[in-house]
Amino acid sequence: MDEAPADRSLARPTDAPPLAHAPAGGLDALSVHAPAAEAPPHPAEDLPRHVAIIMDGNRRWAKAHGVSEFEGHAAGVEAIRGLLTHAVRRGVPMLTLYAFSRENWARSDDEVAGLFDLLGRAIANETDELRAQGVRVRMLGRLDELPDDTRGSISKALEQTADGTRLQLNIAWNYAGRTELVDAFRRIAATGVAPEMVDERTISDSLYTAGLPDPDLLIRTGGDQRISNFLIWQSAYAELVFTDALWPDFGADAFDAGLQEYARRTRRFGR
Image 1: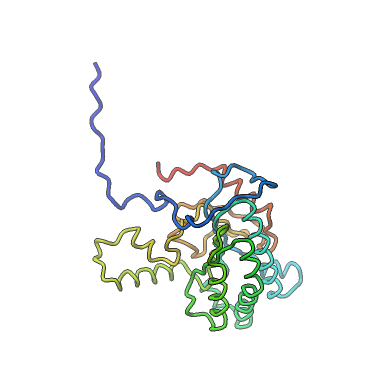
Image 2: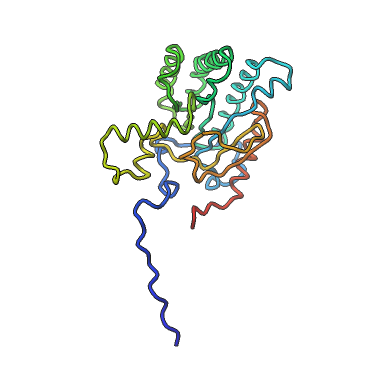
């Protein structure tokens, strides 16, 4: 008669499971449903809760079309408008867009100033439409380093869209993943917490994204296959999708292709 197997139970460390295993946060106030006239391309349970996008390729698009870099960035802003409408239609509750990295300060003064001008004008011109679509805006990054007029436009948009319940839009502006971690560690140190009390939850709650679920799907346009210092803590278990499409050409079909690729994958989280 075979002997019973030996007890193989393990004493598991309390902080070992990644935060991706934890219940989703930050979506309780959102109630997102795709319009009945256009059903999603796959069941709602296959949709990512949170899609993050690195919007790359505006300058290459401009060069390919024989227009100025500023016009390329303007075309990129236009692409965002269409994407938001489509994301609401598809029932994706959260989008995070990488719009301006802290590394982008290395570009020319004219280009940086133009980007800030575009941001300010886009926020001013689109706030009413964002409210109409039920989009709530949140900014991620070192906003204290932005020009006063830009911060004023941002504050107004955040206030006026605060009651949006269909889509949470996070705009990473003057953002860098390593800077975010530095700022988080400074906040933790300032509290005087004992080192042995710091765990993954402590760090997560100190990030710019505190209270938000980690991204399930991260899409990068423009052909490069790297995450470029974007959500480096939060994307530990994100599914990565890379597309050659330059950002101004990234439309509804390309977004749906990303959703379909996500739905095909099996997420095991180490199980």
